[in-house]
Image (cartoon, rainbow, N blue to C red):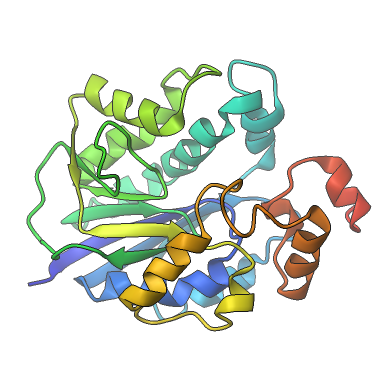
Length: 274
């Protein structure tokens, strides 16, 4: 049986959302009778909010929230303790936290069986037998090593999600690994960590060279191929391209430079004056 109603909260830079969205919609709509969508992203100067809303024209979109880039700059290039190397920890959680007011108002009228959180530039895949009954006070992770939690995508019950979204206030130090810190946060909040039924993989912009069209649903062969291409920037096929090659691909496929390059000089060299 399917979930009766779920919330899917998508947060982060759009990046390869236009390729990922078809798969994202397909997977979640096949595990729940009703899916309610939240989207939180940064207020970059070239964000096409009208087009983003059009992506959800046939969906039950509860809210699209845009967060000032001043916060992103603070987390990523500002002074310690929140700046410099802390962006991968603070930024995603801060976006999730910004969706809580809309979610809480909506829950005055509905109940969610589960809440899913994922990046816009990642696709989900049902990697183990699907299950509907989830435990309270539990985060369902993609990592087989449950001493780490990868924030590419995860799920929980609604009350636990609200706690998880507050993790941006959990202190981060330069030598911390975000995945390990996420697990530590769960332990300190008395939240159990279990392996979920969804796996996630980040989709980099060079996907178009290998798969011009998004696959719905993903076959096991396609999924394994994508996972071999993706991964941390330094290991992925995308991460091994030169900056000039990356920028050429982004221009070709109308992907914002703001989504991948936070340093002003790179954007200015490529046509942005802001």
